[in-house]
Image (cartoon, rainbow, N blue to C red; front, side):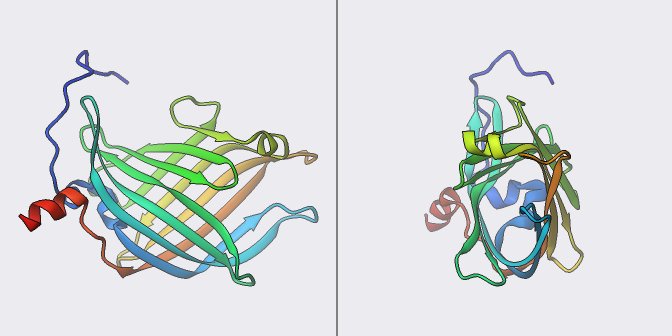
Length: 212
């Protein structure tokens, strides 16, 4: 990958993020589902659990790294197992789109001591996104607590998102784990199809321009 010699000059950004999100525009909004399936490792063997999910993806103002310009969505996911009241999984982060290169990124942070940046390439009208991250990669990698590295080391992350004709979207998320004491890697899988329940709120700068 090549980068420009001028690393300081910023591009002019469009104030309306929703107009510049490329393939991520289909993710904007609030989504829900009760059809999630999780396959995770337990002492007795793989466990299959059903879950409900609510994810909110809201546009942010454009962000720059010098000449690199991103339009994006800030998200929060809350997942409940079908047999529990407590939150089963909580996750925050950003989906980002770089129009100049077709780079798509997902940043994620979970409150069990793990963060990651996953990346892939797409066109503005793409109907499928595939993003990956690998442990040890300083660009698009995975960072975990010392305990997770010891007991449930995450070596890779892959998410595939498909935009369905009815306006819903589906994902399959695979994380490859090295579980302490187990001879083979374990593929931890989550999958779901989400339906929109509310439209997104325009980004702050777009709202300000509209108010004026």
